[in-house]
Image (cartoon, rainbow, N blue to C red; front, side, top):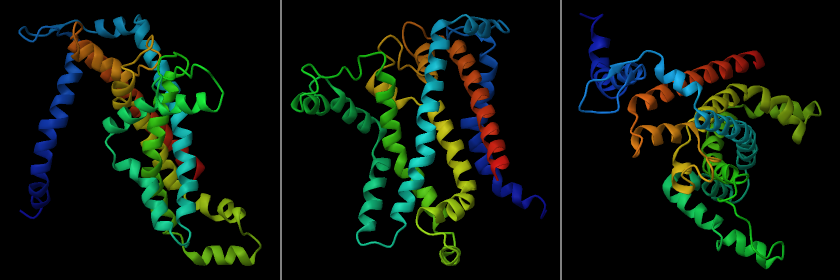
Length: 287
């Protein structure tokens, strides 16, 4: 009976996870090999048909490329800059609590609210363009969200703005676990100022750097809310990410291609899984 006791405690959570995670995931995996466009009819098995269609889908490759650009553009910033902020707010200075709160505030703001606010800032008559005109840099302003070469980077800025405080707190927890004696010993050896962070902080923070790298990479790969609120993937699919494309194909009219959306989701899952393994392996090598 004692051997069953742990499983009895786990059963309620496992049951709920099965209903809302594992079973839907299994269904999505099955539907990715079917044609299921009419909910009133049984799905038709087509094997690799959806994946063959994906291979020839130019928009899918465009959104995949946009997602890679998003990944490359966002992750390095969210790995490096929050560490600097964490070091800054870890100092024993007057008013440092206010700075911690200020940096973390964007995290608690809804992404929908943040997206709408930034969309107003980027508008043709928004604050950014008004400032540009006032300073004399341009008479017409910048087409932030309607220029295909700028739109995805404008959306990235919202992701970075929202994520800095979250990852800063993770790093701050790691910094506060480092004994002060190490820094004192380093100062005696002549390692002080910025040098002490190269010698002590960064080596000891490697597990946290790896964690932030994995989390930020996964978040950047499956970004959706920012794109939905700010651009809907426009202009010319230049800001459309793979998750938004999945939503568009599976849940919007006239597409409603549920099985095709499941196939996109399976490819996304495999990509995120492989990316996570790669990040963890690189973290182990760095350690």
